[in-house]
Image (cartoon, rainbow, N blue to C red; front, side, top):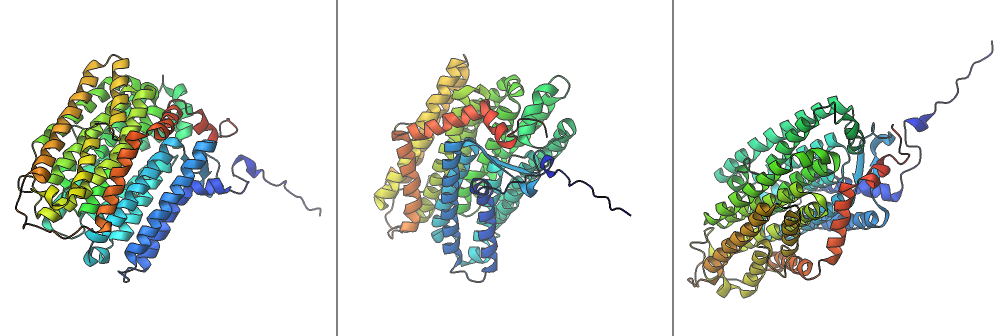
Length: 519
């Protein structure tokens, strides 16, 4: 009997047959690196003396990887790697463009600064209970959120960073920390649940979770599918994550409770992941719906700005003041998203990157000030300038930056946002941005005059010289804010490229679907 042979299956229609290039491995490497270093730290959990060095080396490696990734994207455009060799939209895609690469690099820089600062802020008890493994898992979640090209995968990375953030918040198990964790956890779990439900709804409408595929199909579904409902639900979920009004109350109620280095990490990273997701979904995936929601977003941004800055004016606790300033900054970013266009989107991205650096630095400053003055209240802190003039000067630089004063990093995004608002005739939004900047200057001026400049008892609190691990991260972030303010052109060029790539995502789509056809 003659044997029959079936022709070999054509796998090219379903699988990526070519071996991944080094550039493609680079796309996923930040996440794999963080998880690998985190696993190593867990294995060495009994070697408390080794934990900080391994974690700091791992974070330095992450900065290098993200720097190489940004360089590659700037030179060659967006890059994609698909898990399991399945062609998109079936395989989970990691796709990085200029926006994701910029956020990832600044996040890694902030985490490295926090890792160094933790040498003086995290004791053996904190190391024993897993600060450094939790830090690396947090960075895996943050990096994954910035680099993924799949909206359900974005939800997964939100979950990863949320779980690790719970562990970091409650580190120490003090009553105040547990109370802050409950407030932080409740609303974030509500937001995450809403995110998941909306993603299920989106899959029912589009039949895909790949962001590039969603962007391609949205135009054809606009007249028949409830896209405004989808976008409205996503905006609400990400607004909760970002602490925008009226769902902002959890942030100032929780960010002052953990260790200072944890507060600094959260200030620099967590709300910005929510902002990044909001930018990605509204600007790239659903630009028409963003335009229809622009007034609502602008109003929410203006109210968030003012609620934040007035809340800061009403506080005397150093870290509570900073918590409200984070909320105010989120309002400025949402205003940029509402304005849209190169100026609005670029200003929002610039402001987010600036805030990641500056707010982290200000939380470092608050920790040093509390240790020097033996108090958390600016009503009782005094004489810090006399105790350590260099530290006071660094804090003042960051206060100028967060207020949007030249020649520091906060000046340029504020100018971009005000100009963009005036260009579309939204004078009231430009006025809100300017008023917020003026009131922020009053907040930081009051803080500096009371806590630093006012004469105080020389004997209170710590008077020993500050170590390099204490001042070094603060000085690095203050210097970065100054350098960006004095020479913004390279960062501005990258941000303009990022904003253009979001508005016209053809390069992003071609990276995922190089043949241009449906899969």
